[in-house]
Length: 119
Image 1 (cartoon, rainbow, N blue to C red):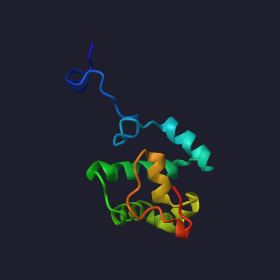
Image 2: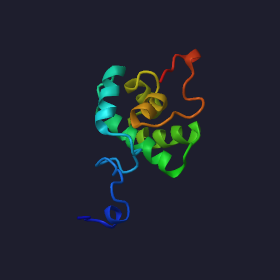
Image 3: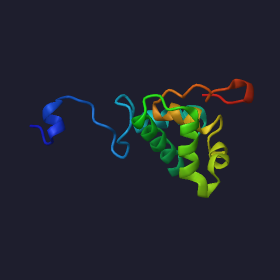
Protein backbone atom coordinates (compact mmCIF):
# COMPACT_ATOMS: atom_id res chain seq x y z
CA UNK A 1 0.00 0.00 0.00
CA UNK A 2 1.42 3.44 -0.92
CA UNK A 3 2.53 5.51 2.10
CA UNK A 4 3.10 8.84 0.36
CA UNK A 5 1.50 10.75 -2.51
CA UNK A 6 4.69 10.16 -4.53
CA UNK A 7 4.34 6.39 -4.08
CA UNK A 8 0.67 6.60 -5.07
CA UNK A 9 1.18 8.74 -8.20
CA UNK A 10 4.41 7.10 -9.33
CA UNK A 11 4.35 3.45 -8.21
CA UNK A 12 7.71 1.80 -8.65
CA UNK A 13 9.51 5.12 -9.08
CA UNK A 14 13.08 5.14 -7.88
CA UNK A 15 13.44 7.14 -4.68
CA UNK A 16 16.57 9.13 -3.93
CA UNK A 17 19.10 7.68 -1.54
CA UNK A 18 18.59 8.88 2.05
CA UNK A 19 20.75 11.93 2.68
CA UNK A 20 21.15 12.57 -1.06
CA UNK A 21 17.86 14.12 -2.21
CA UNK A 22 19.30 15.42 -5.49
CA UNK A 23 21.09 12.23 -6.54
CA UNK A 24 20.48 10.81 -10.02
CA UNK A 25 17.98 7.95 -9.98
CA UNK A 26 20.60 5.38 -10.96
CA UNK A 27 23.11 6.49 -8.26
CA UNK A 28 23.71 5.06 -4.79
CA UNK A 29 26.25 5.70 -2.03
CA UNK A 30 27.48 2.12 -2.48
CA UNK A 31 28.33 2.89 -6.10
CA UNK A 32 30.28 5.97 -4.99
CA UNK A 33 32.18 3.94 -2.40
CA UNK A 34 33.20 1.30 -4.94
CA UNK A 35 34.28 3.94 -7.45
CA UNK A 36 36.20 5.87 -4.80
CA UNK A 37 38.06 2.71 -3.85
CA UNK A 38 39.04 2.22 -7.51
CA UNK A 39 40.24 5.85 -7.60
CA UNK A 40 42.24 5.44 -4.41
CA UNK A 41 40.09 7.88 -2.46
CA UNK A 42 39.06 7.16 1.13
CA UNK A 43 35.71 8.93 1.46
CA UNK A 44 35.35 11.34 4.37
CA UNK A 45 32.47 13.58 5.43
CA UNK A 46 33.94 16.32 3.23
CA UNK A 47 33.93 14.04 0.18
CA UNK A 48 30.25 13.26 0.80
CA UNK A 49 29.51 16.98 1.17
CA UNK A 50 31.17 17.65 -2.20
CA UNK A 51 28.97 14.94 -3.72
CA UNK A 52 25.84 16.51 -2.20
CA UNK A 53 26.88 20.00 -3.32
CA UNK A 54 27.49 18.86 -6.90
CA UNK A 55 24.24 16.90 -7.05
CA UNK A 56 22.41 19.99 -5.79
CA UNK A 57 23.99 22.13 -8.49
CA UNK A 58 22.82 19.68 -11.15
CA UNK A 59 19.33 19.73 -9.63
CA UNK A 60 19.14 23.47 -10.30
CA UNK A 61 20.58 23.26 -13.80
CA UNK A 62 20.87 20.21 -16.08
CA UNK A 63 24.38 21.13 -17.26
CA UNK A 64 25.83 23.77 -14.94
CA UNK A 65 28.94 25.52 -16.21
CA UNK A 66 32.28 24.71 -14.63
CA UNK A 67 32.47 28.18 -13.10
CA UNK A 68 29.19 27.72 -11.21
CA UNK A 69 30.35 24.40 -9.74
CA UNK A 70 33.67 25.97 -8.78
CA UNK A 71 31.87 28.83 -7.01
CA UNK A 72 29.49 26.45 -5.19
CA UNK A 73 32.38 24.37 -3.86
CA UNK A 74 34.51 27.41 -3.04
CA UNK A 75 31.64 28.89 -1.06
CA UNK A 76 30.90 25.68 0.79
CA UNK A 77 34.53 24.93 1.70
CA UNK A 78 35.96 28.46 1.94
CA UNK A 79 36.64 28.18 5.67
CA UNK A 80 38.75 25.06 5.13
CA UNK A 81 40.80 26.53 2.29
CA UNK A 82 38.33 26.36 -0.59
CA UNK A 83 39.44 24.77 -3.83
CA UNK A 84 43.04 24.41 -2.61
CA UNK A 85 41.76 22.15 0.19
CA UNK A 86 39.51 20.21 -2.20
CA UNK A 87 42.36 19.59 -4.64
CA UNK A 88 44.30 18.12 -1.72
CA UNK A 89 41.57 15.60 -0.85
CA UNK A 90 40.52 14.82 -4.44
CA UNK A 91 43.48 13.64 -6.47
CA UNK A 92 42.63 14.48 -10.07
CA UNK A 93 40.43 17.46 -9.23
CA UNK A 94 37.36 17.96 -7.06
CA UNK A 95 34.94 18.73 -9.88
CA UNK A 96 36.01 15.98 -12.28
CA UNK A 97 36.35 13.31 -9.60
CA UNK A 98 33.47 14.64 -7.52
CA UNK A 99 31.10 14.50 -10.48
CA UNK A 100 32.09 10.92 -11.23
CA UNK A 101 31.50 9.93 -7.61
CA UNK A 102 28.17 11.79 -7.62
CA UNK A 103 26.98 9.97 -10.74
CA UNK A 104 27.14 13.13 -12.86
CA UNK A 105 28.82 14.03 -16.13
CA UNK A 106 31.61 16.57 -15.50
CA UNK A 107 31.09 19.84 -17.36
CA UNK A 108 33.21 20.84 -20.34
CA UNK A 109 36.65 21.92 -19.19
CA UNK A 110 36.63 19.97 -15.93
CA UNK A 111 38.90 17.32 -17.41
CA UNK A 112 42.11 18.66 -18.87
CA UNK A 113 44.75 15.97 -19.20
CA UNK A 114 47.36 18.55 -20.21
CA UNK A 115 47.28 19.77 -16.60
CA UNK A 116 47.18 16.35 -14.98
CA UNK A 117 43.44 16.35 -14.21
CA UNK A 118 41.66 13.09 -14.74
CA UNK A 119 38.18 11.80 -14.21
